Image (cartoon, rainbow, N blue to C red; front, side):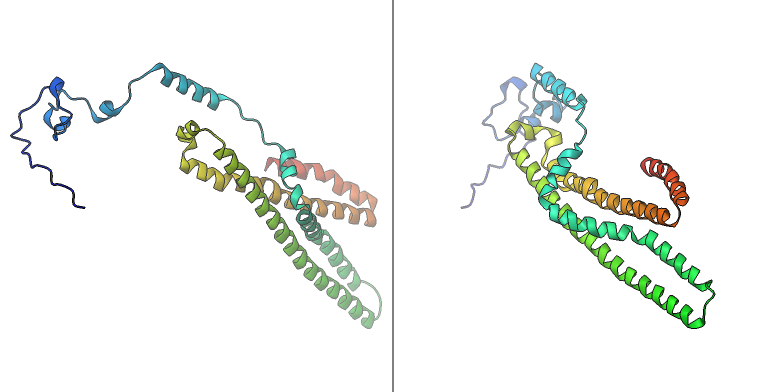
Length: 252
């Protein structure tokens, strides 16, 4: 349907109306007929009057922002990951095997070098070198498989945890009253950003950190065991440097 045409009115020819005599039925806007020097600005005209409820809402918002938030609970993160315990177990095995590669490789390389200094026939030396080179090659294959297991299963665990946290956050958002969405911090853009980023931070705080922690712990334990097998004094020297390395890692 076609809308009816409005009457054409010459604004210049219409007499200026007084502010108290404006007709709401008039097709001319009061902003066009009033004096620009006397009229208020657009923001003041459409702004609602200041009331005590505004002060109360601002005070409440300031109190809410000033309130200290509780630190994140590591126990709750662990409880969230209980559902993927199998993925965590397989990923931990891969992380432990991958972390043990460096100290074991150093030990095997030391045995290869020691084989060159043995006073024996040439045939025995060739057999020793071939044996240790084959062992190093097998260790490389095992390390590739372990690295794949570590990242694959911890990745699945992290993605499932991220999905669960996003479902919990979205469910908590939908349970709020309508006035909660009127706050600027609870706008659609901010809530979408929280759903996208905060759940990813949870994954980075637990899944990725757990993988690196198991990998480094396995490297330290295997290194100390190798030192204890070779010489107990060497193991004590390595163990004495461990607190310094831990403090440096925490500071970093």
